[in-house]
Image (cartoon, rainbow, N blue to C red; front, side, top):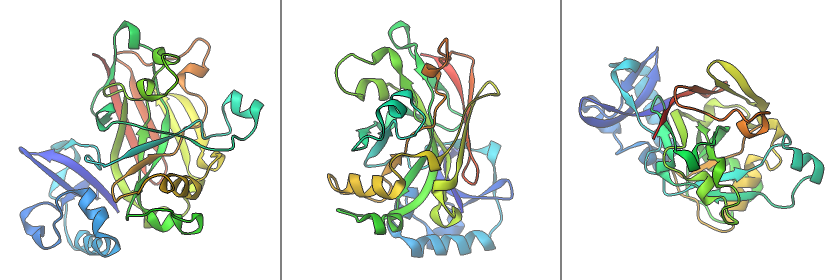
Length: 287
């Protein structure tokens, strides 16, 4: 089931994608299965997902895709984590071998735009705007010190991110935070796909295009640290909560790897596609 958060007619809502339309699950006719938002759906667990599925199967779309303004699917996450250089595609990874530990860093909510919303390229000291197509794990239940063998049971859904980076800021300090957290430099969406819809998240293909030109094409089977390991690792230093988001890394082909670098510029159109999950797309605008 694909679940989408949106604005429509002056209100916030969410619904399920069906037959190229949306069953508005936040509307008045669905009060019995109503949750405040999709984070609330995740927190309510498998029973809530099953109830919503039954509702969607019986219901009909009441909104068209063009009727809504997309929001980030989980628009109020408590935590957003990213895994840096997590693919056997980067030159330094290939030369140095597998790292002992994953590189984990946080991102702020406002560093992401929603589906169809503009990504913002900054001014002169922030104009090296890169793209990184990634599979995102949506945590479905609370967990701490999660075992790898149990980790997939904590996944509630998946979505797509462009985990954009502003490369001008590399080397301004020792941390990734300024590079990865500039305002609306990335994007996420268009919806979440419940975990039961994805047979094996380690066998998905990620394709990133800029103005229709393919820039990235790599499989999640190339991750250095797989999803169960990453979930387990993060849960060792913090408690994961429903609606938390984990961007799992990007295959090779980002802008900085091209010669010359193919950084995003105003007027560009970016797409990140993952089969079985969807297509995230955004225009690029100047700040």
